[in-house]
Each structure stands twice: as structure tokens, then as C-alpha cells.
Length: 264
Image (cartoon, rainbow, N blue to C red):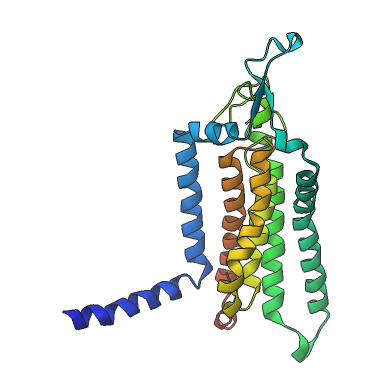
């Protein structure tokens, strides 16, 4: 029995590695995780409030602010150094996309043996995922229809609108709303670019790259611009879209090209 157990265990690990070498497995896993997180934050909205309150400083209301239940501010939002860091992360996804576009154009200018179809596919997946994820899904759709006020806009943190849970779509915000975070989505897209690295380097560079990309979502929470659910779901949304685009490329390429596996 011990011998059977020892022979089956490496086989299962190998099958798992093979399974997650394909974007389809990542898409199913990440999409399920996104919905599970949304359901959790919808069921436990107090968690968003507790995390936001940790960065909120309450002050005594003045006579002119008598209509507000609570008065105060998010002090980190006025720190010059943190504002500068936020601006860097704000423009970093767009600059990265422009860089990839230049690399794609240069690669398409090659012919014959110097042309690299793998790079064309990888750059195309990344650029399409950027357009569909942080730009279209997040900024043009969800941030318009969600209706969720940002923390500093709610009466819990010095504003005048009512707090709403993640995924309710019935808040008082009209445009550029809190759900979900566009900057976190951009950071999540940059984290996905780790798949452009050679496979042997991904495990080495993935942890520091992901940690670096989490700085932007963390700043949005400390500034009172987004809730914890906004940044987590925003970050993860780009990973879902990236996996979806990679899956589409994988499923539509010819049988001959499938020998060159779509990286994810």
C-alpha cells in the first residue's frame, strides 16, 4: 500500500501542472474565485467598513457640517509622497501597454525566420486583455452602472451618501463609482504580464512583481477612494479577463499551432 501511494502522488502533481499549463484551467479557477469573493463581500459588508475605518480620522463637526452624521478625513490622501507614488502607478499600465504595442509592431515588421509568432500571440493577448479589462469592463461599464459611492462620499466617513455593499448596483453614485477599482484593475493587468517571462523565471519574479502591483490597490484603500472589495475584485478582474483572452486564442488557433502552447 505504501508503494502504491508513493507512485500515485507524483502522478497527481504532474497532472495538476499539466492542467494549469493551459489558460482554460486558470479561467475557471479565477472566475470562480471572483464570484466567491463577490458573494462573500456582499454577505459580509461590514468588512469593507472596518478596513476603511482603520484609515479614517474622525474630527469634530463644525456648525456648517451639521447634516453629516460623522465628520473626518483620510489623512494619507493628503501626503505628498504617497500622492506622487499613486500618480506613477496610475500611468504605469498605460505606459506598459504602449511599450507592448511598440514591441508588437516591431515584431510584425520581421519576416521569415526573424518573425516570432509566439511573441505576436503573447503581445496581442496582453493588449486585448488591457482594452477589455481595465478600460472597457471596469472604467466604461462597472464604474458607470454600479452606483456604489466611494468611502469618503458616504455618511460613514464624512460624506452624504449611503453606504452600499459590493455588487448591489443600487447606490447613489452616478458616474466614476467605487465598484470596482480601475487602478487596481490596471495593477492586476501588470501582474499578469509575468507570463511574458520565460517559464523558468516566473516563479522567481512573480512574488516581487505581484507585491509591487499591490501597492496601488493598497493606496486606494488608505486614501478612502475604494473599499477592500473594490480593489480585490478589481485586481482579480484583470486576471480573469487575461485568462479569458488567452483561452480564446488557445481554442481558436489551428491544430498545428496548438503545439506552441499559449502561455499563461
